[in-house]
Structure formats: structure tokens, C-alpha cells
Length: 182
Image (cartoon, rainbow, N blue to C red; front, top):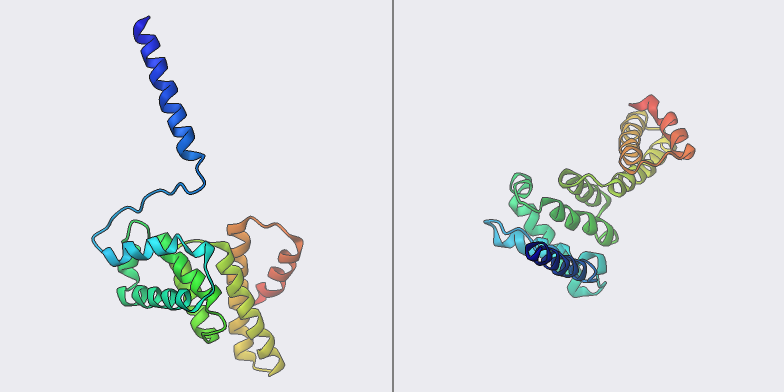
């Protein structure tokens, strides 16, 4: 009976501690350390991106981390234990630096983000970029570019629909239209 009460008491203490920990607003799972301290720092930085301050210092830091990731190479990034967080840096870079970078650089950032993490919104953004390019190709009557961009719209929009689980008839109609380019 004593052992039962002791076990019960310990379970109550453990449960209340875990409840307290997980109810905290700022609770974060620590970064799994790797052999590369710079990438570990980048992962730490990626955790701050959802509350990005749009000042010159923040933009400079974001650009510096993008350059760091580019210098490491995709193989090294994929071997990091928190590689999906590194993909966040590319994704937020594409979002926040859209006015500073050319469209080709934004596409490159989204593609790198997708290499590191399967995220529907990056696919949707790429589909929109290629849809605009497709519209311009149609206006210019450039059949080669029209087919190329139509194929990309279908590819990225289809990935968006699959990853997001969006069953909207609007997207089905658009995919049906662009399915001739796949």
C-alpha cells in the first residue's frame, strides 16, 4: 500500500510538472546540437522569424543567414538535425525580401525552402509566380514559355492542393485547365 501511494504521489508530481512546462507560452524544444555551430545559430535565428521586425538590422541578418546557408550547400543543410528550420530561413527570406530581390531569386529561395521542408504555402506562392509568368507569355504569344510556365503552375498548385488538403472546386478547375501542360 505504501509503494502504491508513493508511485501515485510521484505520478501526480510528474504530471503537474509536465502540465506546467507545456502550458508555458515561450516553451521551446532545444536545438539538437550538430557539428556545425553556424548552422545551429541559424536554427536559433529561424525560431525568431515568425515575429520578424521589419527594420534594417533584421533584413541584414536575414540576408546574412541566407548567404550562410547558400555557402554550406544543400547536402550539408539536409544532414543537419533541424534541417526543416533551415528551410524556414529560405521561406521567410522569399516572403520578406520580395521587394529587394528579383523574381528569379525569390523562386530560387522558395525552391530551396521546399527542398528542406514540405510546406504547402511555398508551393502556392510558386504557383502564383508562374501563373503571372504564364499570363505574360500568353500576352506576348510565346508558345514555348506558355507551355513551360503552364507546366510549372500545374506542378506547384497540385503540390499545394495535396499538401494542404484543400478540396476547393476553384483549385480543381484551375488544375483541370493546366493539366494539359503536364
